[in-house]
Image (tube, rainbow over all chains, first blue to last red; front, side):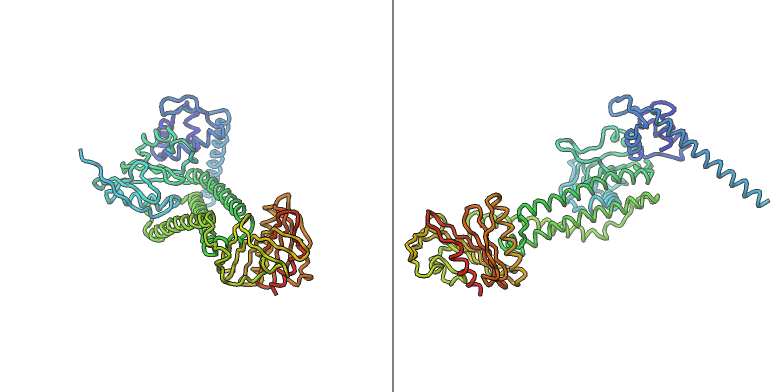
Length: 98
Length: 400
């Protein structure tokens, strides 16, 4: 879910562009399925984290909202904390072993 | 160009068995049977025959069906799926079915937590549907029986009534089972458990197929019998003229309700006829309808109609329920015209007595003693009438 907001933070995109962005950004580690992406887009739209801006044929372009940016920042911060906690724990473990 | 050949197969599992359905369709494809577009007709799956090749099928939670709208996925979902190698094939129940012939195509659902989220909508919808269906069934059941279960069973037959009740209960059980199954699946997904796309669907297919066939046969039977019974009620089937009735009724009739009265049979307001039948809970039932003129010694000339429903129940408890249900039924039927009249069970020497004036403003009496119960209405036409007090005792004594 985080990666969808990351994609739309970069620029407005439509579904397949989001899927490609995620695959590219994660070096193919994460390949989001169409049903998963569609469910996330619908959920984010409902929660007003993203907004539909344009409809071109069967494709819809989405952009991130202010609320979405805040949610993205909050999640990013949470992940930073997770990483720094993990790093601190690793350092402590190394010191004990030394 | 060769014409496409079709094959038909009974669906081996319910649509909510997502893993079973996906595995079945994938196995069919490996046998050269590919689900055709919108390829379901009731419990039948319609397949196109092609040379076997790998093809995987996946189910995705669908939004609610809307009337007068094609029940296909949203255009964006279709476009997204197609670009990532998936084609929409059909809808089955609450799920869309997609297929992919590209073995390297990414899965339709890559995040179990998100899939659980989509499943959540289906569960909520099914829960709400099950609740309102149950409410509707209870309401209509109450409306048609007016809360008089035993009288309905006597009229429609115990076996048939229980049969209908069982069908209603079975449909309720089916709803609950589907909900339980989906809740378990959601729990599995929430715990990061991926779907089993190679589930052994054969394990329970015989049970599912035969239970569905039985259900279809049962519903058709219920409808046919129901129509027959409805026809019998409309056409007054089972009634014979009083003159052809050779048995002695176990209650007073117009002929002997008043001592020393002269009796003349008439056939004016209601036909003079009787119906006698038996049910499992009431081995003897009589519906007696008689119209006659009584000339009493005191000079009164009574144009009267006597209507009696007499039941010999399998037990005094059932007899009491029937008596109470008569009161409920007629209170409901009479509406504002219902007014209670005095009838004391102890004085009359019976176990239960109730009297009221109903829709026709005629006195009606319900009496029960041990396993016998009867509902009596005596309707007098004209100025002269026979008072309830004059005949209620005679009817009560017939129950001794």
